[in-house]
Image (cartoon, rainbow, N blue to C red; front, side, top):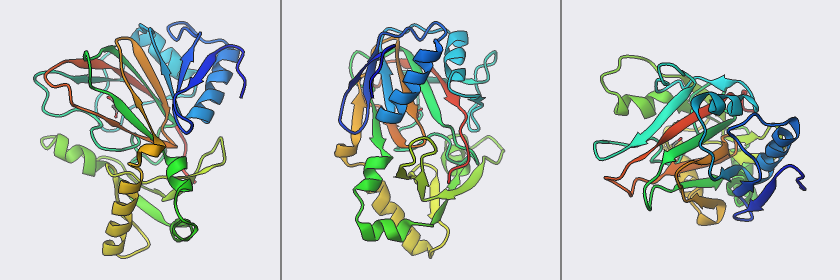
Length: 270
Ligand code: SIN
């Protein structure tokens, strides 16, 4: 893919690219938007530096790629319900996203992407790891691919949010999606189960489901499928939530790591 409005520098062959030559704090041109969509399809997660974006511009940026989704698990900012704070400091008891996951796969229509901005980053540590679910699928044996074809799995929000918020009396979304999903833009197949939200494969006995999910959860951790992003203040990561999983490391306690995320709505997986 060639780009005229951006400079795109891959970080690994399978996943991740740094993007230069675009100011995300200002409205994007049509050309920039199209090229960012192409870059996201090619590289799955895009990294940007020196983007001190405010809440309105962050939402405008997200809306360039679709409608914004309201987070179904945690509340957004009082004045900006589409924006969730991502924050950890010396008083934190947990951080968001410490396990491998795709965002909000408990939703009937999980997000197409997330755009995370950090204004404060630890001096070192606090990296986010991303894994390509295309690469994970393509590395499976033909026999395992055939086995998984047509299976569906339950993704349960209670599994993630009830342990975090035991005092909150509410039911979180729960949805069933294909175990192998086809990306609506690229047409490529990918593994679409994750250890945070997915609780069982519907069509097989529970013990078999547990064993297959344990295999897949281990398989997606292969470093050959991954890229690791080292944050600096005012960096942005924009990931395609349909074909990646990510994990936020919490190795920087008691330092502060802080920012905001908007989520772009997606569609029903097939
Ligand atoms: C998340 O969206 O899961 C948080 C990612 C991060 O803080 O790096």
